[in-house]
Image 1 (tube, rainbow, N blue to C red):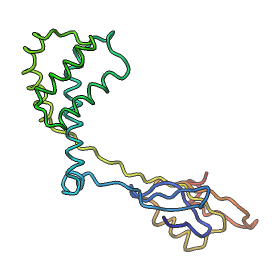
Image 2 (image 1 turned 90 degrees about the horizontal axis):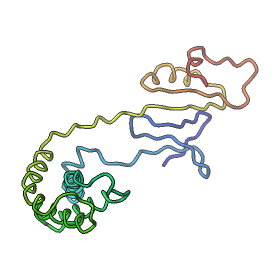
Image 3 (image 1 turned 45 degrees about the horizontal axis):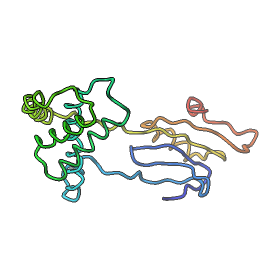
Image 4 (image 1 turned 90 degrees about the vertical axis):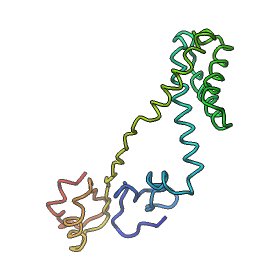
Length: 200
């Protein structure tokens, strides 16, 4: 983290990853936001374990939603789906076959007297559950477009130099920004006209 110095300070984020902020203890600071690019996450060998976990979570979530449809609304309670999903993820992590995981989910819900399927019905439907799971896993995933955050609030505490004014005029057009003048300014100081539309 770097300290912002001078009479122009900012809060906000630009270029998606550069964060200007105020800390009560340290004052105005700037840092690069942490995080891993999604392309790197899906390709870098360093994230192999995390990718496996993400895939287990996704598969477990789908499996849980497939069987949870057979839990009548009146028999559901707040954390039931989470419990079902946890059982699915743990089963997948232990290397259970998908049919075995579905069976474990059915047994849990049956013991809890939550599911409306009989053992026979479940056995008949099991292959269709597995087919639905495979179909849903094959569905193309929409790639999320990460919105660039380009929003700044600039605080000025002394008259701007010609160089500062030129910078604001020429290099800030890619950002959504506001400017705030605070402090003691000479009585004859005039705010550049183009800045008035950004003033708060």
